[in-house]
Figure 1: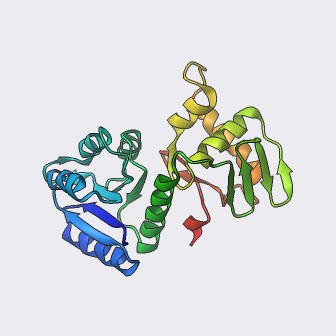
Figure 2: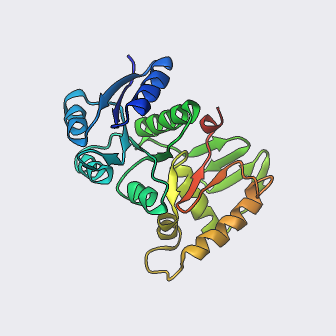
Figure 3: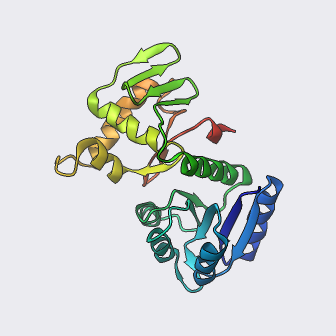
Length: 231
């Protein structure tokens, strides 16, 4: 049975592009021009995933997202022409699974959809060993390898890596990394995240300035690249 994707978007050209791209890969698309209609479809048609624009005729997409998250865990990917850091962070903090800035290509859109769907289906299950490229992380034993070589990380470095592994394929904000790795009352700041991320890349990336695993999402945070992202 084909996965149903709900597209809440008022731009007809974007709707045509997304619908055609998804149809080519066997997805079904349900289109809504307003947030109100989108919410009604979410209840009545129960889509597998939502693509949500931020600038809707009847309100801010962030508010629509907050309403969705009051009762549903359905994966939501924000698609928007807005490039400001605040919009991306606000969307992720409100519960979005991912964020795509317009214009985007079909391959990137489909990769993000596949990752979000896979994560949703495996949430709550055991996830002890993560692999991407030559990187392997055993979350149960706190072991990290690049190929056959074991990599030794400091406790903070490992905590950062583990946060990104558990959210692999998704953007993790710097604020969330700071909270997860250091704790709320540590006194550490965002600069600490940047410093430790630099250290972590030097240990696991072949070329730290061109990372294969730990991608920077400018102004927002970081993303652990999965094998599926490279397809």
